[in-house]
View 1 (spheres, helix red, strand yellow):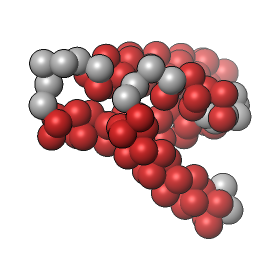
View 2 (tube, one colour):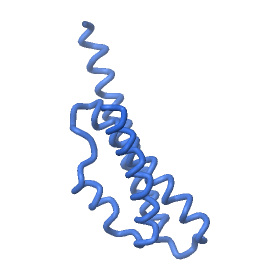
View 3 (cartoon, one colour):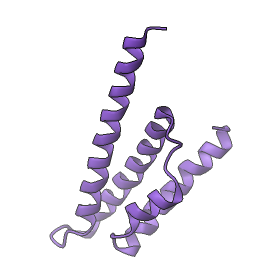
Length: 103
């Protein structure tokens, strides 16, 4: 095993986790932006759900155990409820896939 490559891989995952958090924060801000229309906010809700799924996979790869309920509640705490429903629907889908695939 090449230790240098392993360290570089970990560093890459950490950077991706940081970038994903930045996307999550951008999506949360967009969902609260009064200048955006309903259609744009629905797309941002979908992007947020996808980013949460990506964050979950990255955290699992990094050995951090994935996104737990507290993390999810914190992410969703400051966005309008109708968009939380959209995000939760997608989160349930990827959690169901995870369970179904035995991961």
